[in-house]
Image (cartoon, rainbow, N blue to C red; front, side, top):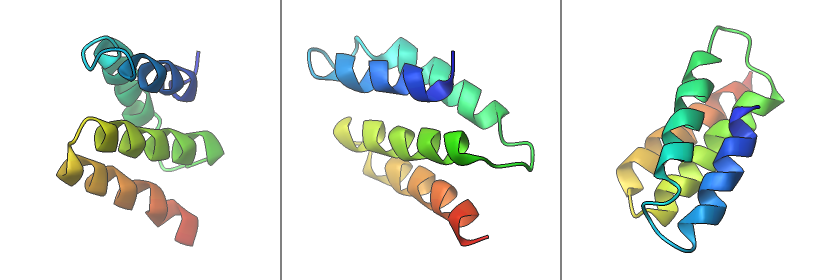
Length: 77
């Protein structure tokens, strides 16, 4: 299962409880970071966009800004 699917589950679970989606988020973030091997594809960019969205919803503004920048860099190349 891809990181994007786990992140969608985490964001959906975040609507009911902040702590319910955390295990999905941490697993998906580990998958997304493991996929940074120099060959960035659309799924990786989507995963980092969803990580930024999850962190914004969790009121982690600085972390969201960091991941927002990481998913925008491959878009320029």
